[in-house]
Image 1 (cartoon, one colour):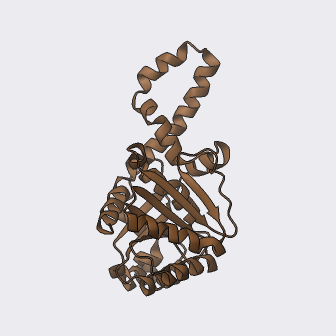
Image 2: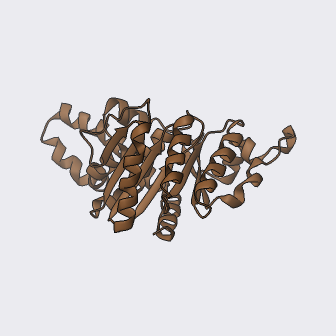
Image 3: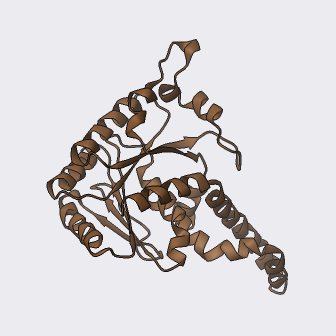
Length: 275
């Protein structure tokens, strides 16, 4: 059983992308093995476009309805259901309201994911969010996700790259900037990083699908593309070229899944601990 909450008291840091695209993708193999994945978007502003065409169970609800959803998550925990619950909280007051609901019903057993970008002002939001989580569950497992890392496609994200971009967290002696991460690193179970890629926007806005859906539908095609292409030839040049374009998108998704192995392993370890 896996229960995750995506939270940050600041909007615009990629919570929706993490909750609807990245986390379901990281658990795609679990879905293939029979587990259910439920994504609850608790947000007064967003509306999911995936509810009708996804192997993931998406529900977009208003903050005032959050308590009922959290009760359902608690029931899954108590019943040890074979399900992955991802709670995607809205920004600002939405996150605070949801965390207060969690505190009120004493919901335990969640691992928390805090997305952030490279704005130095994010340090205060990270600390505020961690403090809110700790006020609810002093033993909660918390992962900080460094979003939109500026790397080229398929480039490995190294510590040096993160230090150059996220100077608020890692500091910069030449600019007289202290290492902000030291203020709360002991509160974290781990740090993960996500590359800046257009693939999520392509999937959401042009293909109307998720990374997890695309992975589950196409990973066999990507793994066996040499043989698959031979079958496309009989359908004519136009169809062949069309499918090649779609293949390139699918290949990017499969490569991203592979490149996020460290993040997958981190979450696997955390969720095993919170059973």
